Image (cartoon, rainbow, N blue to C red; front, side, top):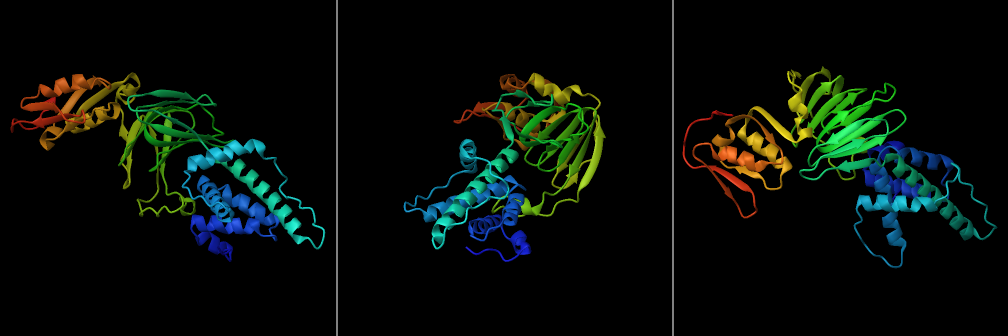
Length: 370
């Protein structure tokens, strides 16, 4: 491995190349306090950088070992090992003193320097992991869960959902990795409350809002107060190792909404829509599904979020039929009875246990089902 020649070359390099550069710098005998400070600043910028350096360090340890055992250790295991070893690491001052070696035994001095450097690196990495590693909360299919945060904010997770929470002195940050959540944010104007949905960041100081993240769109609904919805591109330098750059998306937008909903896609934001009745937005917290003129296909997909035995509607014309009604999320049987009453509809069960809905004849055109 070669040390990168300049700061510009470091920034232009891939994450693994940057991590390899810093490994070389920190293991050189000429490594200075400024070098260690620069590494500390670099590694603290993102958890991906910590992971990349740990992988390089593991690789070099394997290459230098007499017993080379190659393995693909996942990032979570690297984090666990770093956390487990933190109790054994004694914090060192920012400048690590190295006792001068008696001449001419230069090897002893080099070893002492290496041990001190490795201890300092271990401290930086452990601190970085503890600073960056968020708390994770998730729910399984059909499960719902409420999480009370340190500041008094309450997050209720819907079925098959996951969030990551990270608080600092100046910011409260939540990433909705998947699924749906209702946020009741404690008022704290000194620390904004940001929710990253992948396609947008939703900011609130003290309010109540719902975010539903799907594969191709995210719906933000404000139940009480106001939120600021911002679309932005993440810094390219902090992409995970090996991850390709995203395709150019719509220009950044920023919208303030109150008692409204909007949908965010790759193309940008929809126009905010006034919510006349808030109750259907939060009905899922009571395990209710409320539909007003929704297509049968959408309703079936909503039921599939809560149940392992899915409802599969084969007929495109049947999927397009409009539905209005209130159902229990975990009671797909009553919904199947409702569907089976449609003239010409047949409901069967396949080998995987899923319910297949088909249309036996041409029947009538699309209609509203109540």
